[in-house]
Every structure is written in structure tokens, then in C-alpha cells.
Length: 166
Length: 119
Figure 1 (cartoon, each protein chain N blue to C red):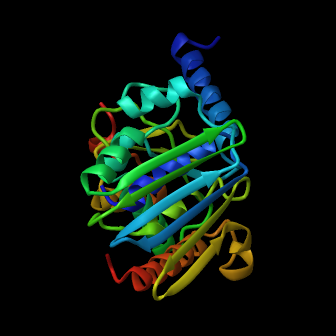
Figure 2 (cartoon, chains in turn blue, orange):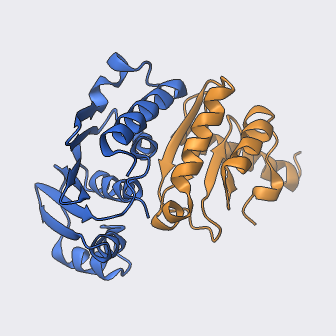
């Protein structure tokens, strides 16, 4: 599964932890791509986390067992830290395609007025920041699907250039 | 005096109105795309974006496209379409081509596409 699809699972987890701010960071490093999602939500308890990583049915922590499997089998890694004040998940992938991050990001369109989603991307070619609070200023009306298309196009185009289509 | 069938029809209509009030603004069509992990692996993000593209290219207004949780249907990806004043219709086994047909026939034409509806 592409990295952008794992991003959807992780942001859903943040929203289910009642996060008010979700920060997505995608960087090029060690010959691979690192995806880090952090939030200020209420976290996940250890028992739920153990179940989620074992792939058992758990009320929270969806997609984590698959993420671990994909990251580690690619030669990368997964780290996870969660407290009642926030969570950070970081996955390093090698040779796994990034996918279309803009397509994944607009899945959360209806949540963005309530939860701030910030996406940063950094590679040797440069950097990029998307901030959901600036959608109306930069792209257009929130209620127009054309604005969703503009955001998606901007994110996809910029990240494809930054990561060289990996 | 109303027959049992009439009363059932009124009840169904009232129930659908309650659901619509809960989920959508007056006069707004709402599309929910299931984003459970199984849906994600089967192309739910592509289906979500296909709805966005089709609605945008046809200049359709008053349609809200949202992420939903896991839709408990066998054939993923799945989506639910709620037209103003109508009961929700759940579709399964979707792809971009089927989304085009749903937008054309159901969202614009008002007639659900029976062959894609969850059995």
C-alpha cells in the first residue's frame, strides 16, 4: 500500500483521539521516505496499542499492524509514542511509493474547519507547507468542490516534484 | 382512515427526513465514502476523488463529499448517497467508472443505480 494511504489511517487515528491539530511531516532521508504524523489528541492506551499492533480488533489504532509490516518489510522502521496529551508516529519506508498525497489529504475536507491539518514536506530539492487554516485565503471557498480540486492538484504537483515521483 | 401501507409510507418518509436533518443541510446532497482499512486497500481514496472530480466537472452545486468510517459491506469500496428528502442508498464494489454512472443517474437524475446497490 502506498505511503499516502497509510497517511489516511494515521490521520483518522488522530481525529479519533479528538486532536485539534494534526501535523503531517514527510521527509526524504536515508534513501527512503519518512512519514511522521503527530497530534495533540488524548492518545491511545497500552492495551489498545498492543491489540492494534497485533492486528486484533481494537477500538483505536487502525492500520498500525499493516503500517509496521509494510515499513519493516521494506527495510525501514516504525516508532510510536503516545501520552494522554498527544501521539507521534514515525514510519520510515524504503522503496515504497509515496502515492498521491493530495488525494489522501482532501479525504479530511469536512474535518478541516474543526481540526487544523498541517502538512510539511522536506527534501534536498526544497520544502513545502500546507495549512488547512489558509484554504479560503489561498484556494477559494470551502464549500466548493473546485477548491478541493485546487488543493489536491497543488499538493500532488509539489510533492511529485520534491520527491521526484518516488 | 389511512391503511397500514399508507402509515408505513409516512413513517419511512419521516425517518428519512430525520436522518437527513442529522446529516445534511437543507437541500444538500451528501455522499459518504467508507474509509475503513479494507476500503482503503480496495481503492476508497480513488472513489472519493472520483466523486470530487465528477461533481466538479459537471458543475454540480450543493453536494458535500465526506469520509465515513468502516462501511460494513462485503464488497469494498462502498459509499452512501443521500439526496434531499430521500432515504440513504448504499453502493458497494465501486470504482471511478461506477461513480460516473451514480453521479449521472442518481445525483443528477434522482434515480438510484440498482445494480450497484448493496444486496
